[in-house]
Length: 214
Ligand code: G3P
Image (tube, rainbow, N blue to C red; front, side):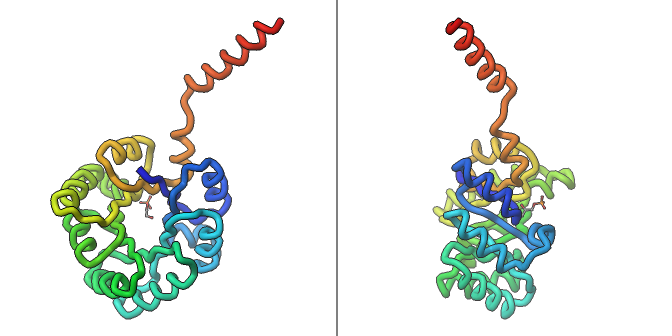
């Protein structure tokens, strides 16, 4: 499973990229707003650091504006993927952008059928938000399972980006189900590096080695 960093923070992206575990980056307006920077500048900087798809979300709601925003984003770097919200206007924009050879990541997906529609409109990626479903007591991971099955049934090549990830169990379950990609907040990715038994084991190895040399 590919792992993306779900952040617009340059320091976090650099740190994770150095670990060699990052295949791409996703951003959204809330994440970029937190950084207090220009959206385009942030995307250009991320593309210089990470060699993989970088999602930039449109800040408009009509098809016409979304297409224009998408074309502008696509000119920033060859790795830019345009994030479009899952609405009727968004589906039309997806069809148009796909026709121009621009990759779309359909965002704000909360049901398997929304994912199917996005794929039919030509989305290269769909982003179901599992944490936000869990937050309202619906099983977020179940929709990942359903989308994987539906896409397999019809040999749909649209990639599934598990989004709105809150904890390591989300990442584990997404991998077991066979999702293509999991986009994770940096703190959650860094959590999965560690295990107390790794630290204890390493300490013991080094102590035993030192003892043997006395
Ligand atoms: O970028 C989409 C996403 O992963 C949102 O996560 O935590 O705001 O629900 P969250």
